[in-house]
Image 1 (cartoon, rainbow, N blue to C red):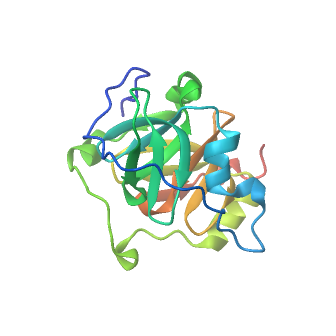
Image 2 (image 1 turned 120 degrees about the horizontal axis):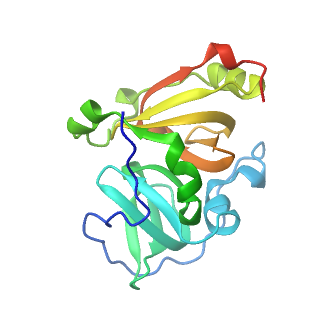
Length: 193
């Protein structure tokens, strides 16, 4: 496997310009802590800009807001970008790229398949919540492979039905569950921190 994700990697796919969204109240269940609200994490807890890794490349966006099916943000060149959330594989603060790069690899044969987002929920790769709970509670190392061939190694800090909050190289990464291709737990790491 090779490393890819240069800090100066080219922005890809044309930006979809759209009017700036109106502020909206975050949608969260009564069980979900605001600490683990994805919208809040992206806009308030991550340094700006946020690097979104998608099927077609990288988008660096600031002032990020999410709606049920879209991500809105401002690129450095100005304007507003509206991106389908199903196209996003994972996200992290752009300034953390140097720290994360050694922990993110590429599975070249999978990348060459040029897989596209799966729209139908039933057809997506599913990871059982019990397995995620066990991996989180044991602080087990997990390997996640995205549909675009990115391989991430770290541990699950928290999760909800849409995303995994993962620690990779001691940095937080939000991994979107709709983009998973494979999920494995390193059984040898159980009980380590």
